[in-house]
Structure formats: structure tokens, C-alpha cells
Image (tube, rainbow, N blue to C red):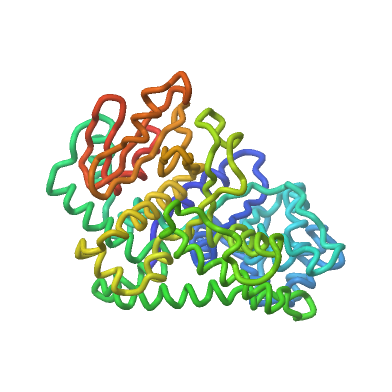
Length: 451
């Protein structure tokens, strides 16, 4: 089963852009990169050459002696005589390209040669592991069009359930025209959104769920396996000699840093406390966090010192929260009982933490740089984004509609500047003075160009 993904259109635009470079698709493991790339390649090219440098490390030899395209093609042809290289009809896919730095360096040669298309991909492209391999490893050359891919967002999730553009346009139009969504549709969307919260956006998990009568237990077991794989990944990273890249102590710190994400959300201020990572000095603890960020396993939101644009300029670098890059990982880490509690609306006092995490998930997948605002005076805003030229406060509400901190900020534009407010909760679409209230499930529609 192939699920329609947003990267399908991104790759089409890339291919039809004059003067494009080879594409480099980066994203967390098992988010669907390889499946989407292969689907795209088979649709538009007669010959598809697929090479996975992790599964077939011997292919790296084709890039050792020369980076000239003719030499690479000649070497690859001898490696696998079934490969067919026909000008303007062939695309090469270099998967797990971080395991072959010379292959990434060759992208410049393929761009200048211009006879064959290339899509490279990898889950660990951002990892700074060069010194662990060898000091002579070449640097990326910039001749690449980078495309970031994440696990499925709620819109892609709805596509997988069979909803098409005609049905989703109703949601968009309600938002655009500032009118409530019909109650029957609103109820169905809330139900589907809870399902999305519980199983997340990994394609393999969703496929298992849909192919087995929507069995939450099977989805949960698959997510726990994914967690096990994520935690075990650092131990699998090896250099060209087959030696481990990370020491047992480094692996332990990375795993502990990963586990602390789930528990940090229950802190009073939800701030991630680096010192709680077990073992190592401050630099080594931060290295463990950097591994998670660069492997796209987690993402970071900074507290800001002020609400002026650009928000990045006011980021407080030692005051941040960490979230898993897919909500399914968080919920599975809490156990199957949490899935049942979400579906039955019996979570209790921890509901706020979980719903803040799902809103963070949705904003992250909408490619919104994410910040928050918290002061010792008691002012606290869940998230702050830059939206349509304004600093926009994001409030996540699970009970009352109280937005005391936001109202304080909005009533003092001379101090905080002109800001806007979006409140997400168990509501329908509504407007109240200077802010909008929206149901959680509509976050993806908010960033449509039409709105």
C-alpha cells in the first residue's frame, strides 16, 4: 500500500525546475523517504538505478578513484551488470548517502554532466561524525537541492483514510470564510484526530493499523519496536573498518537523552534540563542531544526574551523544550493505557501536556519555526510563531478558554509589540475580538496558501 505524500509534489516541482541540482532528501528513519522516492522515480523514468550504501557497502568502491560521471557509471556497471544508463531516461537513487561521503561529493559532477538525474537520501545526513571516520572525508559541495521529509502530518493521514481534496476543501473553506464546521463533520474529524495522536505518522504503523481492522494494539507494538530501533541506532553506526562510531558511554547518554524527552514534558515549566542526562560533562550531554536533533528524532523549541520579529534573534539558547519528531513515539512511550485513555477521554490532569505535544507535532510538520515565551513574572505562552508578518501567540487549551497571559501581552502593545493570537482546543471555528479559536485537527489547514 502506497500512501500519497506531500513530497510527491515537491519532487515533481524539483524535476521540472530548470537548472535544478540533484535532490537530497533528509528525514528521520522510516518516515517513508525510500518508498516515496522509488514511487516517483518509477513513474517518471524508464531506468531506475537504486543503490543503498548501508545495505551494499561494496558500492562505495565505485566512488573511490574518480568522481567523473563516466568513471562512476563504468564502475557501477561492473558492480551490477543489470544497471542500464540511458541519457535523459535514467535516474540514480543514492540511499543512506551519509555512509558514502564521496557519493555525496559526486552530486556536483552529476549536476555539471547533466545527463542523468540523481536523488540522494539519508537519515543521518546532519550528524557531525566526520572526525570519527577520518579527517580527510570531503565536505558537501552545495550542488544539491535539499528536501526535508517528516512523518505523515494529519492531512496526509486523512488522505490515507480515503479523504480527497473535495472533502478537505470543505474544511479549508470553513476556515477561510470564518464559519463553523458542520457538527457531524466536526465530530468525525475529532475522532480521527485522536486516532492520529495515538498511532502517529509513521507509514508502516499506519499501514499495519489499516490492514488489520484498525487494531490499536498492533500499532502500539510496532511503535514500541520503532522506539527500540531508534535507541539502538547509535550502536549500529560504524566506520569504514567496521568499528563502532560511538562508545558505550556515548550510546548510553544518547539513549538517556531520548528517554528524558517524555518525562520533561511533565515538569512544571516543561523545560528540558540537560543536567539530568546521566554521565559525561556538559559538552558530552549536549552532544547527545545534538545526535537526536541531527538524526531528526527530536526537535527543539527555544524560549524567547521578547516577542519582536525575528523571533530567532531573541532565542534563549540554554532555555528550551524537546519534543519527539512524531507524536506516536511519545504516546507509545507512555504505554498502551494512555492510548485507551486518549480514545476514551479519560486522561485526567496530564491531558494538557499531551495536547501541547500534539500541537507542537503539527506545527513542526507544517515547517513552522517554533518558540515559546515564559517569564518569572508568571507570563507563559505555549508557543510563539511568525505568521503572516506578526508574532503570533499559540495557546493550547484542554479545559477552560482562559488566555490570561495572552490578554496581558495583547493589552500592552507598547511593551510587547503588536501580536496576534490563535487558541487551539476542543472547539469549532470561532472568532472573539482579536483572536481566533480553532479545533486541534485544523492546524494543517491554517498554513494553506489560500488562508
